[in-house]
Amino acid sequence: MATGPAASQLRKGVLGPLVLALLEERERYGLEIVRELSTRDLVASEGTVYPLLTRLQDAGAVESEWVVNERDRPRRFYRLTSTGRAELAAFRTDWPAFTRAVDSILTPGDDSDQQREVHP
Amino acid sequence: MATGPAASQLRKGVLGPLVLALLEERERYGLEIVRELSTRDLVASEGTVYPLLTRLQDAGAVESEWVVNERDRPRRFYRLTSTGRAELAAFRTDWPAFTRAVDSILTPGDDSDQQREVHP
DNA sequence: GCACCATACCTTGCGGTGCAAAGTACGCGC
DNA sequence: GCGCGTACTTTGCACCGCAAGGTATGGTGC
Image (cartoon, rainbow over all chains, first blue to last red; front, side, top):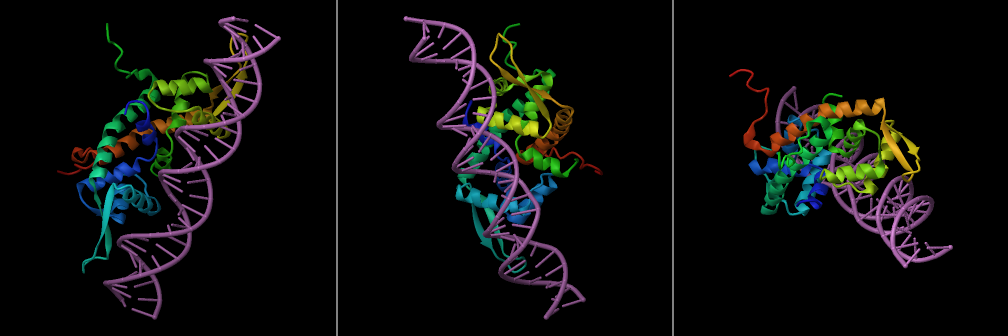
C-alpha cells in the first residue's frame, strides 16, 4: 500500500466501506442502511445509498436477494461477499493512516510525526 | 453549521481545509504545497492543487500575489484571508465528529457511542 | 550561443461521487 | 376510494481528484 493507490481511494467516498461495515454485522436492506447512517450523524439520502449499493454489487463486494414474507413489504437484502470482506479489511488498515496524516496537518504544533527521535 | 451541511462538506474533499491549514503557518506557493502534501503521505498532484487554489481564491478563502526576486523564479504566493480562517476553524470542529462517526461504524464492538448511559 | 533539464504555473478532459427530486409500486387505515 | 407511509429506482446536476499535456523561464554544460 505504502505511497500510492490506497491514499487515492481514501479520498474518494468513505461511504462504501461504511456500508460494508454495516453489512458485516448482518444482512440489511436499503432504507435500513439509510436510517442507520442517519442515526450515526452521517447524512446519506436514498439517492446516495441505492446507487452505491448497485455499484458495490457490480464490484462483487455485496450480493442481494429479494425477501418476501407476509408480514413485511418485499425488501432487497444485501449481504457481504468475501471480496467485500477483503475490501473492508483493507479500508480498516488504511483509514487510521489517513486520519493521522490529516490530523498532523490540521494541528501544526502537535508534531505527532512519530519516527523522529530515532536517536536522542 | 452544526448538524446538517457540514457533514456533507466533509465527505467532499478534505484537501481544501488541509491547504488552508498549511497556509495558516505561512504564505506558500503552489508547488511548495504539492511537495508538502506529498511529504505527509497525502498524494496530491499539481492537477489537483492548482485548480483547488483557484477555487479557494474564488471563494475568498485565500488571496494571492506574484513574488519576484532575483534569486528565485517568479512565484505566486497564497495567503489566508479571514474568511479562510473561519472555514478552517469550522473544519477543525467538524473533523473530529466526522472521524468519530466513521470509527463508531467501523469498529462495531467499540460502542464508543457516548451519550447513552443516561440512565443505567 | 545553444541544447538540455528543472522549476513553476496553468488547462483540458475523463471518470467517479454525493445528492435532490421525481417516479413507481404496494399495503394499510378510515 | 383516498391518502399515507414504506421501499426501491432512476434521472440529472455539480463537484472533485487526477493524469496528461502545454507554456514560460532560468541555470548548466559545452
